[in-house]
Length: 228
Image 1 (tube, rainbow, N blue to C red):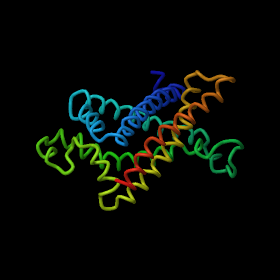
Image 2 (image 1 turned 90 degrees about the vertical axis):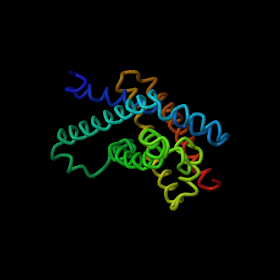
Image 3 (image 1 turned 45 degrees about the horizontal axis):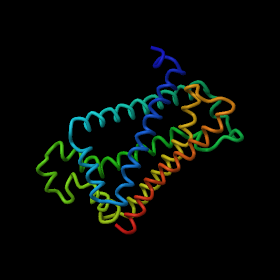
Image 4 (image 1 turned 45 degrees about the vertical axis):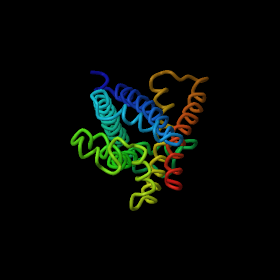
C-alpha cells in the first residue's frame, strides 16, 4: 500500500493525522476557555464528554491518530537519517532562512509526548478513566471525576507543586506552538494545496491559528495558577 510503503505516502499520513490533531486542539482550547467564564458551563461540557460510549470511541480514535502520527514520524526521521548517511555528521552550519523548529520537529514531538503523559495523568486518568473503572468512587472523590472545573483549580493552584506543574504546562504549550506552527503549512504543502501565491498565505494562517489556539490554553493555565 503506497501510504505505508512510499515516502510520499508516509508524509501524507503524517499530514492528515497532524491536521486532524490540530482540529482537536482547536476544539479542546475552545472548550477550556469556557472555564474562564462559567464553572457550571464547563462542567456541563465535561459531563457531556464523560464516560459514555461516544466519548470512549472518540478517545480511542484520537489515540489512534496520535499513534499513527508518532509512528510515522519515527519512520520518516529514521528514513531521512539513513538517506543522509555519514554526511549527516559533517554538517556544521544550519541552512539559511530555515527556522530552528523546522529542523527539530521530532524533538518537539518527543517533548509534546512527555507533556501529554503529564496531562493524561492529571486529567484523563482522574476523570474519564476513574469514572469508567469505578463510577461510585469517582463520584465521591474530591474533586469528583465529573467536576472538571475543580480539577483545573486543583491542578494549577491547589495541588502540591502546582506552580511547577503550571510552568511545565506552559513549556509544553510552547513546544506545541512551535510544532503546529510549522506542521500546519507543511501539511498543506504535502497535500498539494499550496502554490507560489498561497505558500506565504498558509504560513500566515498557520501562525495566526496556532498562536490563538495556544494562547487560549495558556490563558487558562495562567489564570488558574494565579487566582485559582
